[in-house]
Length: 467
Image (cartoon, rainbow, N blue to C red):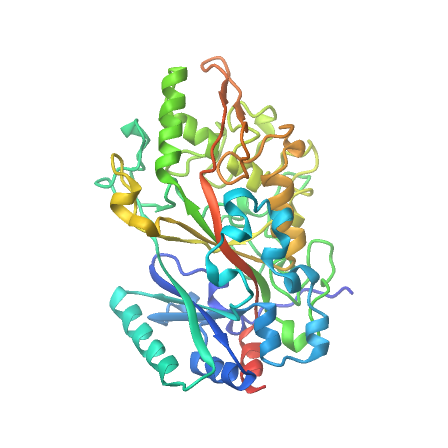
């Protein structure tokens, strides 16, 4: 089916699509279960009104609330069989059943996940973001009080505190080289690198950094990616409106959400790099940057980059500046797959990330147990995409955990890839640097659970609340 693209009703799109950024730096995720459809609808009515993309754009709310459902959550609401049967099979199966595709093995195997994710108990994710910790705590108190007042039916089976990490000069995150410390405030992840830079420019919704973040045409010009790659009911890169759950009133302005709790072993990451650099007489922070694919402050490794966002890999086809096997190049290959194609071979697999960190920052010289105890630290990795299989799962399987498309053989992503012993990454040398082999890579990031969710438009959410 084809159609002309229409403008997006941003009042019907949930706010997480816009992203909550630094205005709402504090958050808490609630994972809830309801025993009856009536109880589920009571919960939905309690959560309404949800925060819209428009609300976030206008910065009207001090508290932002969004919600998404697992397949079992929709089924428990007694959603019509016609709708359930039209949902994509990977969503119906759930993330646990897709472990082989996603590389969830070893310490990341579903058998090792947190208990709430093991038996399809999570029906709904409720994401609450706030301007201050006080506002968040007050909302939490009221919500938990409401749940407790229900004699039966709604249970909070788990929750997760989240917050934004921002670099500061008095909070060093480098391993050995102070010069690698970001000099201006930027959003960080726990390994000490700027985060949130690889998101796509999307027509009608996200228009920042189109040059470098959008689609690169064969003529060398950048344009925003079609809305339908990320939001249901709109034209995609093929000029068609993709198949979506029926009826249209259920799926319009909705999308599919992937949520993964990714634990980051900061001690292991730093210790590995210190040992490797010592053995090779190298710079641990420089090696880390080449494994990631950017400097700590987000500066590209590509020498002819026009900005932190606007660059291609055309001048670095051998990966001597930004290694072919680096995390950034795998996650968003841009124009890596053949001269003259632009980003044509990549565009259909782009994902919109809305991740947020959990745990406190482990500074230079600290050990993670001193800072975060047994709770650890990591990333609540959230992806929004119109097709879980074509977008998230493709990236996870083909680009993160396979190496053929990058001429890397059996080598996997050095940061988030599955490492089963003996894994490596090659950092090619140039006239100033010798080649480096990062051998015996360790499992720096481990999946602790998660699932696939449907994030409905706000009108559809209200329809579910009415039954």
